[in-house]
Image: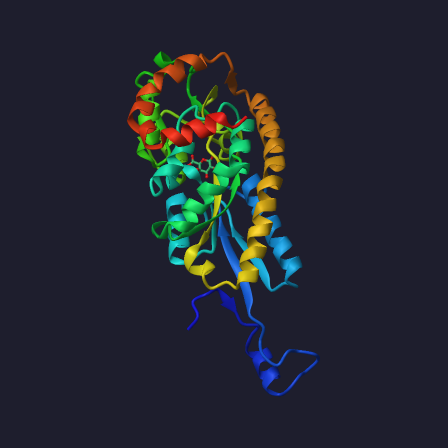
Length: 333
Ligand code: GTR
């Protein structure tokens, strides 16, 4: 029995087939391929919209044979659960942050290093170039991941948000900041002066409400979309992490695809990488406007140099693993 997501057109069409051709119906039921895809963000969010558009392109290119069924807004759990579901083939695609993937593939952690990119524009050049290509291949080539790396997406810069302004490392003293599930991030927050608490994204809102954490760090669209700005009203532009997102495909499901379908999916994914960043830029502008309207204090006079100096222990601990890669990233202009 083929475990691929195959939906038969139904008993009626099979019966029609066995009776010969009725109304131009093919003799055999046509297999449809519905690609289940998941994201922690809701419909309309740039990463979700980019994959929905990919689905429309796939439908158009295959006369409806391939389509995407989107499960947004953590319907299928947090990022950890999504990765596990894709690994066993219960989901075909998952849009995730590189954050947790760094725990599976060491080299990918280079993108998770604080201040590794000079700017978002620098990060985009890196993911669009040789290094980006190599990293996608690393995901696909490593059997342990059970995933295929399809394309990158943009998630801007992450900034600290809590109940007070954060301008320098001392301001974070004794403050519990939720970080993504990867020890590198807890070390980063501790080095920045706070107390890093590792926690899944799906638990964060209630953890902020109940005071389990005092705040978190993320990009403006996530901060606003998930209403975190209603609880933690100071958004300090620390820009300590610029972590790309990644669209992965279940390896188990990928291996069942024809070569033609694989290259079609890769082609539309490469287009999505470029399209998503336009949606992203618009969303960042909208989110910043909404923050201002909502009475959030946006702290811009952050001593970034002090934070950069503070994270040196993170470089001492992890940097040796990918010193060469970091040099290549710095060399990208
Ligand atoms: C968002 C990202 C999510 C998730 C989240 C988090 O920026 O889009 O995929 O990683 O951050 O902090 O867990």
